[in-house]
Length: 223
Image (cartoon, rainbow, N blue to C red):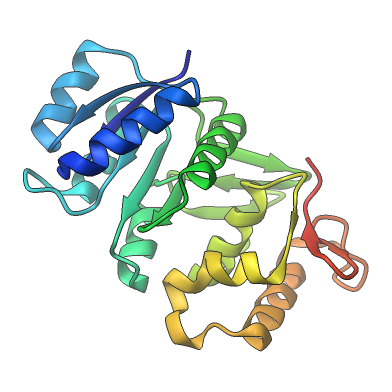
């Protein structure tokens, strides 16, 4: 059974989310703050941590860094902080995914399973073809060379990687990157960023083999 540590100081969220995740087959322990979370990490083995940025005891960013340094397990941020700084900072210190509140519980369960599948439960490197994404460093490289993805490009690429095998509509993609660019995200912006991302990751951007267009539906990265 997959063991999850939920670090959240809102008792109502803890209760509802723990009940839902347990119904999905996950074992859940919770901690209201940084010190309690570190204590549980010392006592038990966890496969993934769900972590709120704003904690009454401690700081989510600092805790994420400690988890990645000492335990090297996947971390998904759950937070109401949807500004660009929070999102980029989370990825830079190693967060594997970032889900703004409010979120749909079933979407969260899917994202948890995707992160576990991509990281093997503890790894930090995602490989697709000759591209490697390091979720600890928040970088992507091709044949050992840094792709220098922008925050939006990196976020967009992670969305694709976390949903490999699924067709993602433009609406879904817009929703996923809205956290970073806010009102500046629109359909034209998405087109531009997909084009820029393809130019960096594809051998032939005019005939993409990684991010494929599914006519009338959206885009897909093969599983």
